[in-house]
Length: 390
Image (tube, rainbow, N blue to C red; front, side, top):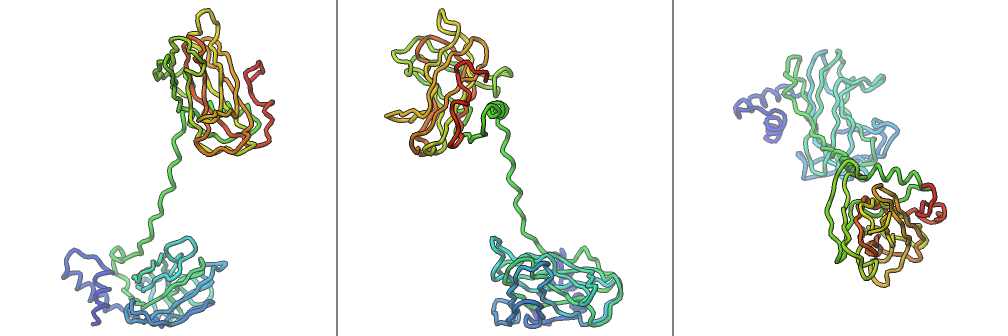
């Protein structure tokens, strides 16, 4: 018995716990072999095919098929005729060598939706079939099934469907086995298909999504968020801060900021949020932040934000958008700014800032949203801090 056929049968076809049993089963399989054909035995329909020498495959011959994508995957097939009549209930196994020379565009393996045993004329019904994904290395692939009727000699083909995609495949030797009606099909091999990576999980919902949706409902366009709403960094010599959380806070968390005394300049104490995207000349930049005045300056009825700005992060600190606002005591309040970029700015060159070092006060700073609304938006129609019903 040819050693490589024996190895194919005992090693690849059947996995048994005992080597002796494995060898015995291999001998039994060989007794059921009805066809052993070399790689130059394939008949090919509707595609260019050439027989070539290939030392990488057993027996050294292969048929190369250059397939184009058809309207149906079976429009191009490579086939071999079953050499014997078939009885209803017979269990069939086909093993064949194959590889892909040129896989479909964007793929690493051939796309073979079916390799099966069926009638070679209308109505082309089949009783066995299995998909395959040929890799670039020679390997053995399988098809098995149970005959659903009696079939005359020469009426059945084993065919490999090749027209599911434009691809070049090499087909090698083929082995067919009629195992009779009593074979345990659970012991027959099947093709290992590539594992398709699961789609990446959707990112978890941001705690600020609800507030962002409310804000966008006030705007003429949705805009692109270009900062992290929760990334707020208080600064200044007179500032102490702590993180607070609770169901009454937009997004469930905020910065509680105490300004101990007025600074020499209003910008000595404030908070910043970095902008993470580039901005083009003409883009309309809109920013909004939720603020609550916990304790306004002594004698005042509202907190004071002397500047709400989007500007260069370094000197000369050119402003893209700037405004100011007062914030009623005890209520979360939206404050806004908007403007048009006068130049192109790379990512990281622009930042959002609040200045509140004008006076002694205690503020809670909630989420900050900086949106690029794109060009052509009328800033006069955007929310502002001057009494409009936004």
